[in-house]
Image (cartoon, rainbow, N blue to C red; front, side):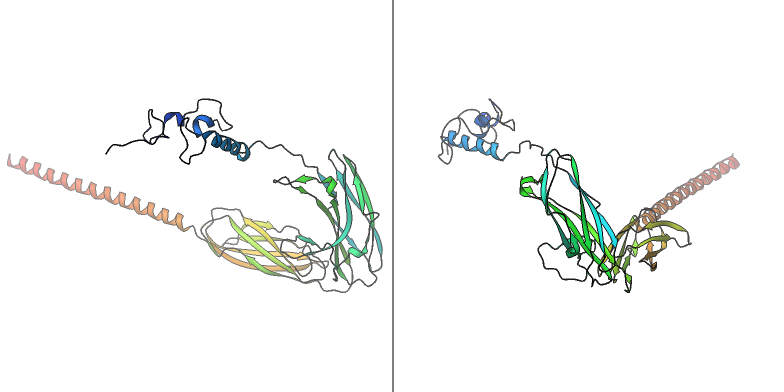
Length: 371
């Protein structure tokens, strides 16, 4: 049966796959990818298999390339805005009035305008992340936003300048002993957005200075270690150490301490300090450390010793863990077995050779006696 080509295929020089070389090789003006749409994307003669005009398809494909191919993005400079101090701690008596200073620093080339307000915050996770309670009627023994009086609620920070804000705090007359928490938040208004995200959408920044107020009084400071863990069995280091401390006090605490790692002979391998971090009332905080040593073998002991609170109360915990480099031991055993095999092999070979020599000597002796 005679094989005929469709009319829309070129007549000259097909490639092994039946494509005309002129379809594969560009001849004129490269596109942004270095490909010529007139020669690479479409054949030059005849209608397409779908019956569409080739020039029409060219227009669509070129438009697609220019729209969807990545192009160099313009760098957008962010406008830095910082707050100082980030945290302030105060001790106040019920009904007492105190003052504080907050600095907002603009090191950009344009002014930044925004709103200023005091907001309560709580901590819900084990990382100490503050959650601000905007526009919420927050009634809690830890609330302090209503105690703060700001000189104004809107302001503009000139370019390359800073503003100092002096605010007042008057503790409630019936404030309960313990911790009370608020944050003074500056939020840029829509006309002075500071940054943009990857999609080009504007982001109104929020920065805050956290205020920790402690009302002294008769309350019990109490904390405990709810988790102290290292993998019980490992083959090698480094090893993660996780410590979780629960604060059952009505005020925040800031434990300080160290984890001491000793080997089976009582020698100190390393000391791992706890990061000094606040733990808010009725919340937990997770501390992460790492035993950096890679090559370990044997049974080890980890001792946590920490103190917290105004009276220096202590936290203690002890765990044991074992490190055995199983794969290393297997490799060593394989090496020992291989060495023993090789030694025995050569010893056996030498012994056989010696026996053969002895036989030869005996033959020579007999020949000498016979002669």
